[in-house]
Length: 362
Image (cartoon, rainbow, N blue to C red; front, top):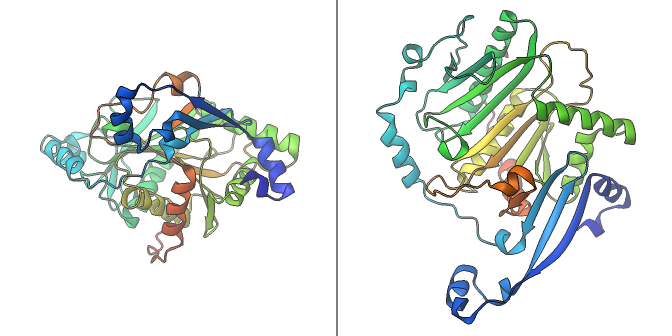
């Protein structure tokens, strides 16, 4: 696929990404053959395996793809087991009545149509709250609710900034279910507003993007999408750019880029999440909204977009973790094929949808 890129795009690809292909072979005893055939379909398929190593040379994100693992069918599981676990915990859920059972911030609450803020009891940072959803089950979201969650988070950020004008760096995250790190199953996101500089990985991305622009006189994020679009992994919709990342932090990572936190951008995030849930069978995921500071700062954020990153965290009904030592200290081991994810995304995003009625933005 790289060889068929135009010379201009291939040049951009090769300055961002490095690809290595190796073969891993093994000598399997005959006693293993029945299990191997049952598990992988054939003996020949596992005897010599192609591993593709992709490294983003700008951000130093790396992924190891095994064709054998990626060729496994994506299971679109019925979520009855997961939903039963969620419902079982609903009776002891403190977030069912957030106005009564969550504290408020000193500057009050942000209230939306389908969500409300509450001050986080165990804080990551000085200004840290949760956005409590009206549904106990976090998978029961629709277009209007996703837009509302973002808007309530933004209202909280504005109130927090008024309370502490030195806090300017906003982060919105959503850990969906226990597999993604949520301590409570009830649907909720978390919002933070920090001082002095953005959180370390976001600040690092800002710095490498500025260095990239200085070195190549081109916007890193524009080039990143151009490469993915040329490979068939990206699609644009209503001014928002969406792509299945080829150096994902974990399986099925999708990045969404826009110029602002507009309703159109938020609705595109909904469509990606709906595709995850309804087409890809994802029940547990992490989502992060990353954006420039909400007030003027000394350092340059020129060319830095509003960005959402979403990643699948695997089946909540399994005990196995999807992250181990390799992911923590070396490179990310990936079992999903970003090209298959991209095909599902294109189908979902290009389908016709009725937009949510425009609401006044905070």
